[in-house]
Image 1 (spheres, rainbow, N blue to C red):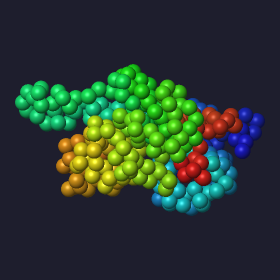
Image 2 (tube, helix red, strand yellow):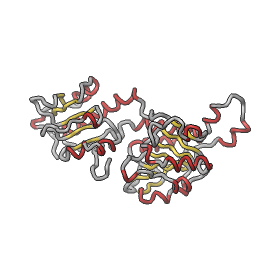
Image 3 (tube, helix red, strand yellow):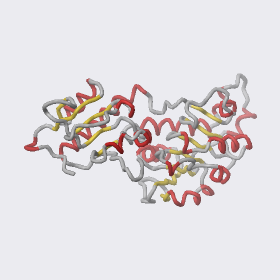
Length: 317
């Protein structure tokens, strides 16, 4: 599909469902100009900053591309938004928030491996009690399930600490910086060589419980499992059982299934479970990161170039 506007004119991009100075500036500095969805100057692009429930049932025929604000797009599929607009290209914000999320994943992993939760809660010097449990990431093997934007950003962070990375992606195409790249179809083969796991894959019907009882049972008693993607990629009941039995070292979860995690859930009372309330992508960083993605894709759209994070309707992300 050709995106280039005629005669090099600025590309007309709508901003909805409300105006936003940061996003308006992003569109304009990328060579676009902001119009309304019902303007006389028909919009060919739409930068959206709301959720699926607010999205219009119909779009002007001129609209050929929509930029979504979320990295995960499962709600946009289940709500029927993409199905209602089969001839429109949609891009997600996948990768736009990768740095902050990868940083949070590393923090959770380090906290677990370094046995910080138990030490933070004590009020007495307990070197003999805690020292035997303190580990290191140096020379460990960390399997990243989902080597997209977050996973690729995390790889050099882990490398700087001396860890080796096994990257898991859909195709098995080698990922820069990874010691090894494995296709998701061969995921079961990596657990024997894995010390720790970071889940950063997209949520689709095919990835539900991607890390389940079999995977957890194949890990080491010292293994930590971190999830910064979507809660249902990890089988919660299987994780609780593994934690209770001591089959794994612990979990660091910024996302849970169910979410929010209800008061009284077993995970809250397990000493080897670190729960953070979906804050890996802090709100104060989201607006600027989304604006940068908008600017990049408006510029690409105007130049007729391939857009970043184009949603694959067949794969579901």
